[in-house]
Length: 465
Image 1 (cartoon, rainbow, N blue to C red):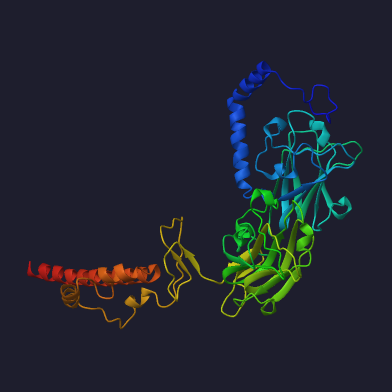
Image 2: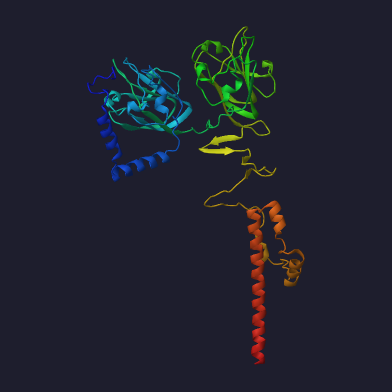
């Protein structure tokens, strides 16, 4: 029984026969219900990416292990018994908070309530958006108030925010959530933090302890509990360090450091976060981006600093360096050291090259795709003369005898590439369409000439008759 639930029947164990009845009722879906589910699914697809999914979440307290992360696990099932509902202690002003990782213009928020009981607990909770890393509701903007309902959609009004907070004001309150979904877009002028550049890249550290190697900080797991096997650990030594090689230079926008959390989080306090372009373990060859603090997670703005190597350097004697995860975000750079990503007036532009698959990109091309491409339409912008020149006075139209001789010798029309050339070099759509039209227009001139000759012959025949 849920000792925090005031309702008498709220969380008593349901006997086996009742459980079977409930399951049977759940299976009995009417066509209208099925259609409703389909329409909801289509609506979700139209909203594109749920920005909250698997992001960092916290809450004012945990009850029976029903942690904040459950509300961003992608499971909106509100039945507490199914293990995907958050639950705080009975307390004053409980809250739940989400860090989206970067600022977005938030358009919609979907709040999924607990449904097996106690839905009225969420009634009156404030839905808050803000840009400050704070748990003080005064630092946020209220965009809506939750109601006693299984699910609620709140208009975010394109509010600029990185943090979302569900705040339930009052004494002796419990806050439970099944799921929180957030939808929106990156503000104009910002580049979305899509790919973690450090993931699975080459790493090293000053020493290994008990097999807790440097690779554990780029395995995609941010869990800071050492017992779960994804935390690095050096020996006790002077000036321990950890380093990642991104493989090439990038314009770095953000570095995220995830600390060990089961203990000893203060060990990371004071570590230098360094960026550099040289393959070196000497901290003097790097630029100091920021200093780590005693916190579970820290985001450091890199302001587009060009770097290939990121180093975490702890300048202390007889100390240990441990990291749960290091994430690096940024974009490629051009030959002048400038970012290849730009965004203005909702238009994102990329000045680098794109390679899809294993096909090499020729020096004078921007993209190469190893495979098929499907689209409804392709427009080729042609530069240079279009074959209207065929109809211009003075055009040197080859004679049919000259064309016949060329075909006999080469096996194809003049100015048209041979089968061997196409196999070796491919086709340039714009140029090929230009050449084909040239041949069509030349053919038109031959037909007109033939018609002129034919009419002349017809007149001579009439005279003879």
